Length: 306
Length: 285
Picture 1: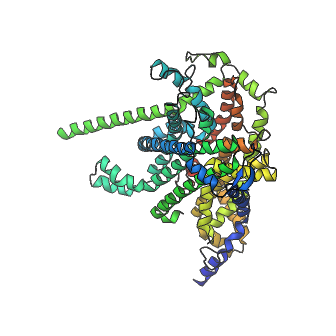
Picture 2: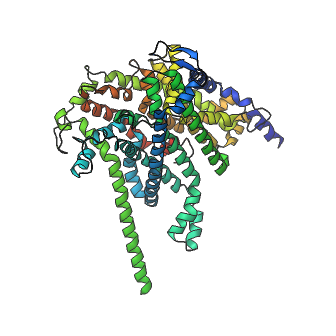
Picture 3: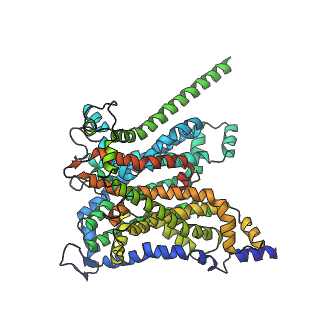
């Protein structure tokens, strides 16, 4: 007993009396995080209270208080971009979730099928998002794209798809569904295959139907994985950028600008870094709060993993 | 008689369900890979064949797109080198700093560990511009804009989190009794880590390295904003081929093929770690 105590003290495992013991391993990442994250954030925070514009010589960086934030909240283009972000999440998340779960159910019950099809299914999610954007751009081209020509021959769409302000946002959503449903398939399949066997044996002895097994055993057991999947897709849907840039560049007009793209445009096209910093701060606060809520949900579901 | 009939019916049902499942899954797989294969095929077409409005599967294959992009007249061999240098250095930096940190997260009681952990998580989750803009302002002061070290540092913002989460879940799976036994044998804490734990973790470290390399290799926004003209990577060179005079479809497709095919091979080999990596270690593959 006393032996073990000494060993624990040496290695410091769970030792509340020596909370500094582990820090000697951490100083490299603390320095690194200070360089790549903390210091830049503080500088940007100070920018958001100042009037800074790289291409406007009259903006000399004077202190303007909360003006930039006020401007953002009254900027209809910013509000529109947030609304598009919300629409993208509302359309893509349920479709990706449901299709992903259906395919995962099929794959988890047939291992041979999984072995041969999963490598093809994961292609869209592992290739560079910029290539995904190019795939969308080329395939949707009405003159020589695979999908573009097909849709034109079926008479569903006349003329350009990405140049049509009514259809273009849906093209962005469809591309995201194509790209990321495989992610849901992959992690739901992994989740289904890692479920414990005992409850299913008990259920089959009791003569439960497959529908009952799915509803009463599989779904509750999978709920931690569902939460993680939704959290990760939510944050990634919030920050779509590459595919929009290469497919539509935010156009036609600003109809395919989501909030991330809007922030990019203000900062790196209009070079209005003071106002842009305020926009970025607001976006960060939103994603931080969402993150916090989800992490609370995850940690309350399975305490030991965090 | 009745029972056996029912059995045959059940069997028939099962075969029917399995066939339907198989067809459904194969359909999904086809939808997933055909648009991509179209791009790879276009990389071997000349300009006329790419722009042809008839969707023909038969054409005369040519390597001219690859020659134009990667040959002496194109810049893509430089971008390819930049991508490799940035990817490899980034992986090394993340492993050197992240692996000891992950070990300490797994073994020690650390004051405020949960907050630090959450902080690392948010750096992975907030919108890309929200990471790129502060770095842009800071690097402008440090004269790191448009340099390869700048892009390497920028890529650590997402890969450091990946390394720490993956490695922590691995170290958690190694019993602490091993550390204790080695300490009793007279090893110092650092020796326990380098001589006992690291050799056990070697395969997982290799997979983590490949996975972080893929993420750095694929990354576009940071490389475009912070890399500028001098530290351009393959993905961040894409918009340069979409010009006002027209789009260089052939070259774009050729570069796409070069960017994606190694990644697809790596990803298929690393499938198990892919699940863990993409969910930050929360789901075991």
